[in-house]
Amino acid sequence: MIDLHTGRLREVAVIGAHCDDIAIGSGASLLAMSRAHPGLRVQALVLSGSGTEREAEENAALAAFAPQADLRVTVLDLPDGYAPAHWARIKDELSRFRARTDPQLVYAPQRGDAHQDHRTLAELVPTVFRNHLVLGYEILKWETDMPTPTLFHPVTAELAVEKAGLLRSCYPSQADRDWFDDAAFLGLARLRGVQCRQPYAEAFVAEKLTVGFR
Image 1 (cartoon, one colour):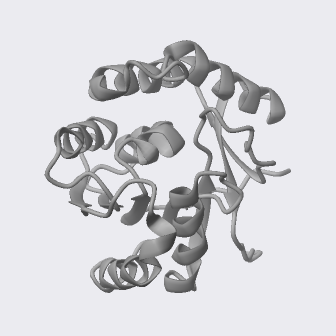
Image 2 (cartoon, helix red, strand yellow):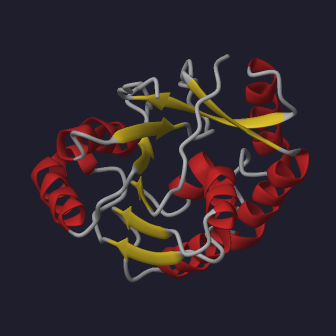
């Protein structure tokens, strides 16, 4: 037996460096959680995109990915691509975010991500959410930096297709990227499904877990 179950969820935190990171990395999980736990509080923090078309996209996208949830989204104005130079501010913003949320589960980038913004955020999140289950999501992109995941969330074919469709429809600003399409997202989900003997899956790198036998 390798299955673990969360029980009732009341609040989760989702954190991204850019608008679309959260949906790419954990969109199917957000859909599943929100539907399984109506009224779930979803606290979202995104480091960049404030005041641009991307902020509007992100608000609409997270609302679509978290149906029936009590969704609260904060989009900041850090410059894209320069997160390491803003280490202190990111740490402060994470601390402020932590003060207004008490999640049972935290989704954030994984430490091995080659993008400097993702990696910086991944390194800082566990220093603020010190006693939480932090799951590092993977972001498909040009760099060959995909992790060796340690935790899988199996999803149905229908949910995997829904996620890919929402990504396409909610983020028109990304349509010109050669990796931003259904085939890429479904291909990765299918690979992760194979690795956990399921049709499709999202995969994560767990920072630290404890287990109790009750």
